[in-house]
Image (cartoon, rainbow, N blue to C red; front, side, top):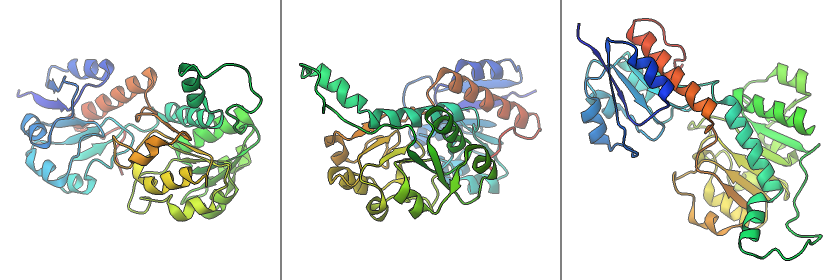
Length: 323
């Protein structure tokens, strides 16, 4: 019996690799180099594969899908987001697209809270202050910032991650929760005394704003010049979702002009590089798209990828298909 070929575009956690390697009917090939494969090389190495494992840095367009051949049955994205894949083009060829939801929910929610704390308490600035040997004595007004307890947190997108962050903020810091979403979440309203709000109302009344919506045509530049005008001057914006949801030029202007207090961003509009002006500012904390970077999350993501591939290549429904 001819083996089914699985190509993995870049290294994933060993747990998933081990699961796939246990099947003698699978032939697993992985790009073990620490680099994103160029389009043509990806096509060449993955051509006629039965399953393709992608990372969010792989751009799987309609023409790439067409070029991969007729054997492809599943594209398993090693990420929650899947805006790097032309899902409609895949579905047109009866190719299942899967992602890794739920397993990284806690990790991303924790990272969003970590960015909130870093911005409010000016942790990165303080670290650099000490490293630069500027710290000479205790000073009453050195690096002042707002407390988090009992403040209002506005969550844009109350899905799994937004809900997990709401739990942390409410139970850990006694924060008041406002949320905006296309759907109401009555459970969050009941258990956390959260209030549903329009986007403008949320921006106007929140001390902290955290973004947890997918990147869609309707959410690109959801936060821009007009939205920054509405926000409180002491507000802190956090983005662990997708970079283009925030207009970075508008963000740079808002931070420079003190329209808001600070921002913490893990994702960039022009990834991997933030807008140059942002790099000149002290009131922003950057992390390099590591919100889901915990040992537990990466292992669970690899396991989810493997389970999806095993199911589809055995003619069973995928565990987490993209709708």
